Image (tube, rainbow, N blue to C red; front, side, top):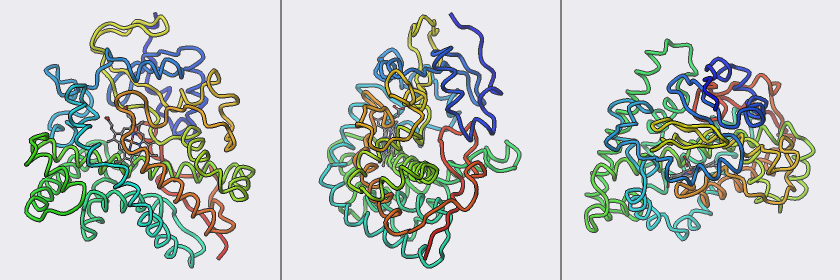
Amino acid sequence: MTDQVVPPSEFYTDDFAADPYPAFARLRQDTPVCPVGGPRFDSYLITRFEDAKVALNDPRLSKDLYGPEQHYLRIFGPNSEGLNKNMLNSDPPEHSRLRQVVSQAFTSRRIEALRPRVAETVDNLLDKIIPQGQSDLMHDFAIPLPMMVICQLLGIPETDHERVLGWTQVIRTSGSSSRPPEEERAAVQLAQLRLHQYLTSLVQYKRAHPGDDLIGALVDACDNEGKLSERELVTTTFLLLFAGHQTTADFIGNATVALLTNPDQLDLLRTRPELLPSAVEELLRFDGPLPVASPRIATEDVEYQGVHIPRGSIVGVVINAANHDPAQFADPDRLDLSRVRGPHIGFGHGVHYCLGVSLARMEGQIGIGALLRRLPGLRLAVPADQLRRLPAASPFRGLLELPVEFTT
Ligand code: HEM
């Protein structure tokens, strides 16, 4: 039994933010189930691939944060129901009901129909960048692309994109400014409040002006089929909006850096663009945007690798550690785009497996493919170790900026 809690100072450093993989390797090897103190809460981290897959599908590790025990208070804090009481934070049968409503509206037909629009959005963004010979690719490409796509799918009017993006970026980059923590927290709370107010009124607007978009379909499921409450309508919209662009933006940023710092693999992909689908999977395995799956709660005493996890503990499944497990992937720290497509867990596993996987893959393939095709001589404009990243304590792994240059 490991009962020595590793203090946050071991993990939440700038070195860890730059490259967490050596620390993940140590955990995986020495303490594969490890109690760790965190800036927001303590948790048990699970780092080996096989354990991670089992844990993500273990009904004793609950996602029901808003049940009678109010676990959300430790994780999101009070007043978080308005945005976060959604499928990702619930267990079956609630989860199945909420997911089914969205799956029905989030059909592959609707996603496939977006393909030309995604390609057009990519081209429009690149048309603006190309004459300049340089760009902050996070700001100019990786963030706006998935944002515009998910807004289009949901039916968020173009005139509102900028302010919605403003609020979601405050949440995403929380902890990265030099402001005192209380000010940061207040800014995040305000952004969440504004987003909640905005989505609530947007839903009302869509009710009065029905359209062929995803929010319209959710309003229909609420009003005519009684499958969704009014609050669930808003929390589901928030989940789709946030999950729909945040992870994809960070994925495109991380993937671009991985390619630019592995020139042999970049050349390989340039000469063999048919590798793009498997390349996207390998890039996601190599440096995914969601290092730790969203928190689970042990509903009873459980044991993993002989480590006792007491009832009520928060459990974090470290996706990015599991995806570098040498027991699962040969030479795991090497980016190898011709790797036989392995069963990585970058999109999760089990009942909460990513609902937007087809959209994420489509955006990754079209976006990364176009970057390589249309920006000749693409290179980092600063040394890789000087890239500014989200803070180590962020739940996301991504870049604040991605300065690049290319030949015009
Ligand atoms: C590269 C991009 C993406 C990655 C790496 C990713 C990753 C993940 C992961 C790991 C989970 C499971 C989390 C857990 O079990 O704690 C998840 C869930 C989810 N993702 Fe994604 N995601 C991506 C893009 C998207 C997109 C584009 C959407 C579109 C709306 C989306 C919607 C969702 C939703 C709704 C869930 C919750 C599913 C549930 O609780 O049943 N994701 N995603």
